[in-house]
Image 1 (cartoon, rainbow, N blue to C red):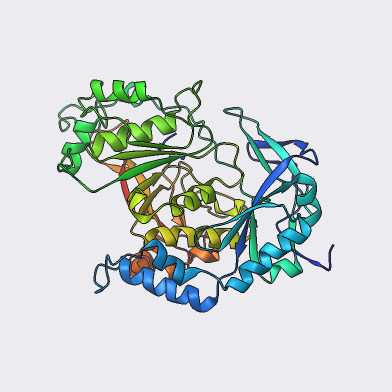
Image 2: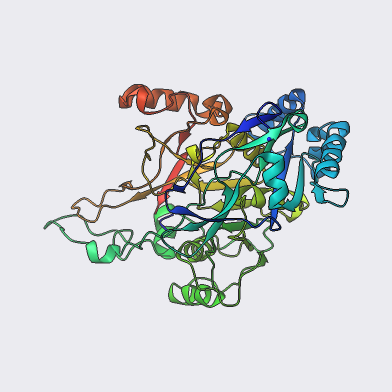
Length: 454
């Protein structure tokens, strides 16, 4: 966790022009012939979404008779596919405006059409100004997005509610220095309780087994599967994984499946290394998949979810861990959050559990308000915060980590009406804590759901 479309003929999406944002600065505009990939989010019928929400609620509720009766990919397609006439209209628009031979593909659920076009076409069709952006700190990554707002043509907006790939959030760079907790362990008082292993030497696999009562090895023939999802050019090395397993007496095992490409010249990244080493160190014997999303994509979270959903349900890792995110305000249009939530809902309807780190920024801050991280604020994931034992202590009491993310969602799509299971607890907490309403959205979904040693 420490590491994580002419003014009258177009509908405006986005905000004012950008020159820089956080750790990113505009480098140069794309050449007219350079390729841009966009995902056209085709509108669902509202009745479809109502049926889908009801279905997901039932199969996710342990007290409901349909709990665990997850959908098949074919059944989910039947439930969610927009009218065929709508899909045909979008494809016809692309052929007319991009070209008869346009490179395009509709997804399995018929609700996204992915199109590759030139930057000149993207700029003209969506009133965009596609540019390269460079990270001003950390690894030398780049991001492609429009300078300023983009727009959706009115004739397309009748069928498409969002165009992903034009104004996506900047990736969160995981470049915080590692904390050497061992060097900070001072201040023990005479006669204090004996040190728990979580304090010194720290959260090794054996210590975590003991602290949380974990059975370290999966049963023979387990059908459980798990995955870590990595972004922004953070990679793991098999040799480092093997050394971790040797050093800490972890059952020797290799990653079962790698989805994506790890360059032969790649260096190990702190975030990816911690993720894969600890998930395999704790859930020993469970087949592990490593999912690598290219750092060059403009739509990393959407690419991950869409790629998983193109697989057969039996081939999707049942538990997927994501230790990355971005502040909710970075999504310039609420529909971007809504449509990513739909992809997370699909995974849930197929029986996939997504656990997401809440981040390392505490309550966060933007425009004098608290600002948590997405997708941790999605009602369709389990948001995981962090706890620790403070470095100067005489009691060794486990407390909330001082930097662990938490708070209340600001996006309407993450309103607590979509997380009714936490209503009583969150309402009671808000009444007791005395935080000013002006600093947060009181109706937002609260995070974290759970917390573990970080």
